Amino acid sequence: MTFAVGDDVLYRDYRGNGQLIGVMPQRVIADDERGILTWRPIGTPWLFRRTADGRDRREIPFHARHTVEWRLASLTWTGLHVLHLFRPDHAHSVWSMFNPDFTLHCWYVNLEAPPARWADDDLAGVDTSDHALDIVVMPDRQWQWKDEGEYLERVGHPDYWTADQAADIRAEGERVIKDIEAAAFPFDGAWLDFRPDPAWPVPALPATGWDRPSAINELI
Ligand SMILES: [Mg+2]
Image 1 (cartoon, rainbow, N blue to C red):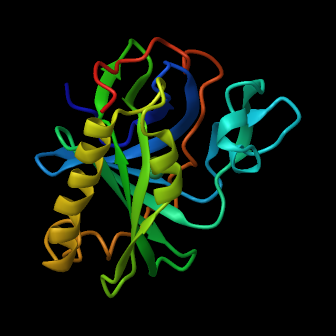
Image 2: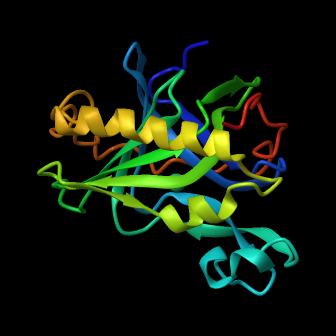
């Protein structure tokens, strides 16, 4: 299965318990041996979980997140444009995050389950499950781990990862760090000259079908 350049696909994020927590429409820029390259500009409509009274997950202590009621809220992506590279068979994606003037703000390495593609008659997408731990890489390739606390507090929880799986998650990050420090792909300057066609519409969130069953087989 290859996605058609110019189509919108849905990036969907699941928790280990099968709960869908985020849906983002993104425009396909390329789909080739380097991965699935997609574009999520400022202004893109998306869905992300909030409590019933509108609070973000970061306002809820981890131990309380299983007792509050969640719903998917309609949001608008703000702040930075994202050129999002899914890497089949790799447990991470790499987001080139651009300032509004298209200078590089940072790369964001999102550790996550390898992307699972799907396509129906009129919708297509990539499903994954976030691994909490991330790496933020500045344009000079200075890097730092992000959200290590959230990753650690999930170790051993039935909805997340065992200690062995947690070690696999961190090992994936350490492999990426070698590429960062070597200025290897995709930290080699790939796509830093990317500019969207001003005629492109903002990716569209479909009214229905975004909640089709998950295509994920493995969560780690
Ligand atoms: Mg993450």
